[in-house]
Image (cartoon, rainbow, N blue to C red; front, side, top):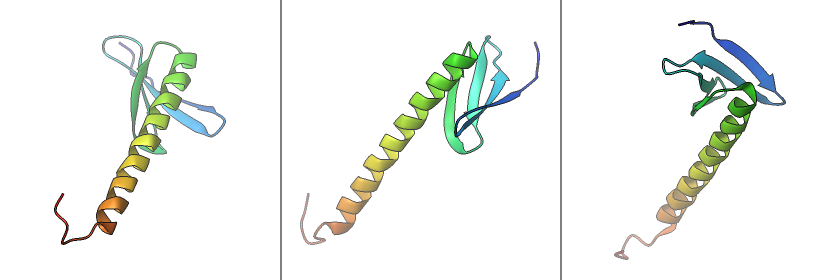
Length: 79
């Protein structure tokens, strides 16, 4: 099994492809530490990474909204 990693870029998305033990590649990004996905091809790596990045952004936006809502809640009010 090869241990060669590849760094690839498409537009503003930079990915690191590392061989996965089960085949294909584990895909990460130095600019999105929480982004981890898998892919068989380079095209699939970018597609999966963009999907994962979108999901991370949506999750963070939802969390930020929940934190904002909680900070605005009346402390005397019980949920």
